[in-house]
Image (cartoon, rainbow, N blue to C red; front, side):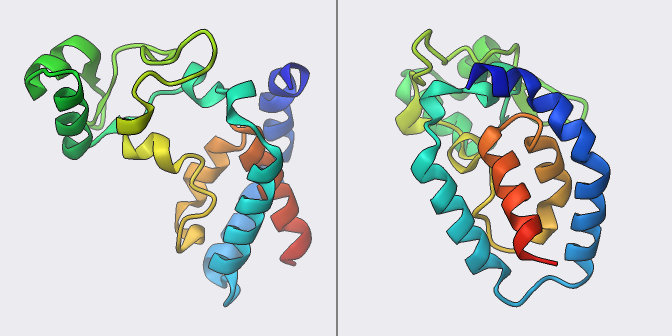
Length: 163
């Protein structure tokens, strides 16, 4: 897994132009069964992908925290939302709350998340490959294939199934 992870950014960069072309076509004319296909590919991939052996998303990127996320996680820590924000978050250039630093503060050495049951929605849904109207998040997917081996594999399988 580690060798693949180390090589993933280069692999994603090498395929970026092809992927961008593929997603541009997909956006213009998505297949009728795209959501079902994506659900199937996602489930198939995650039967063989163990996120605990990777956790690259937690090590290299930070999620967006919605107001609901902040409320829920602050309650979990028995903090006021503003205390949670002051301790763990910052506003990014888009005025969204993100972690003050990466790797994620809540990621343990064993790759387990210490707030897994109350984690942000962005974490729970990552890498977003089973999302409805998948073609609408192609820019996000293009970024995620460089971070997540599962997303990379799903997109590669997708390209063979959708011509």
